[in-house]
Image (cartoon, rainbow, N blue to C red; front, side):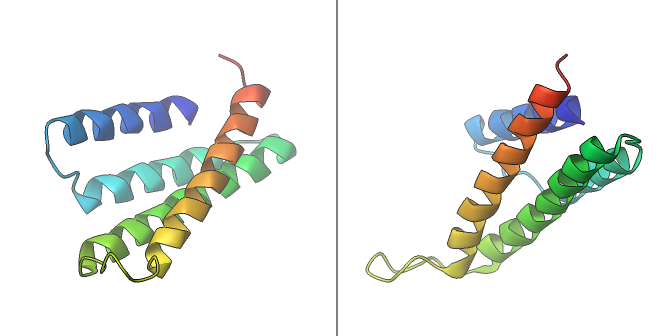
Length: 106
């Protein structure tokens, strides 16, 4: 699960560096694969964390969809809700991922 996430991050970073937009279907595939992997975890404590990570990945996909559909924000207006959600879900995702990394060293 951690490896899959790392591979997807590398893909996104490469695409971004090349000024290529990652298709939303790739985000959906990433989140779906995390969900699939989370469902295979047998340890109850780890299963809770992997399920949370997969749930947050799906929320991230929703925020990416909102971002792409939204008009460009006015620089004088408050941050749109999708931006706040992106930040909050990102922090939660990273915290959960760090917990998993500590619990499952390579």
